[in-house]
Image 1 (cartoon, rainbow, N blue to C red):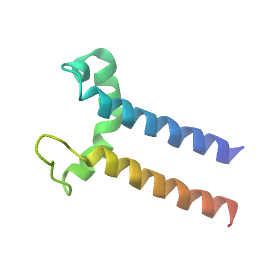
Image 2: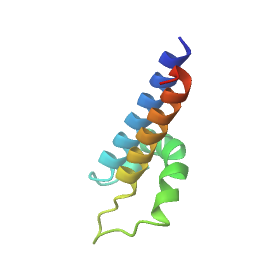
Image 3: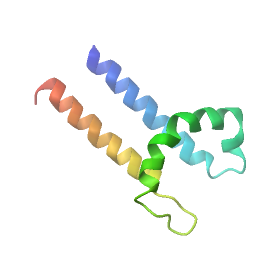
Image 4: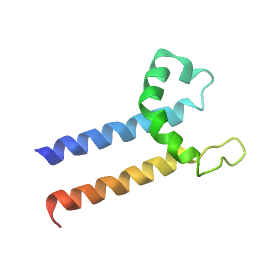
Length: 84
């Protein structure tokens, strides 16, 4: 049961990161009410990666790195909880 809640939380946060990244493709989408709400939840985490991963042209890869690290943390946590 606990693992299901943790899995849901990781999936929800990953989805928010994807929504935030997709919003960058549309003008002013991040300035909408939804964009500001998602940004408040996602930007503090994604900005950690902005410090280490410079953008390529105008494309930032920090969201992809944030998703990859989140995936690794999820797998590590599940292995600890399940005991595999």
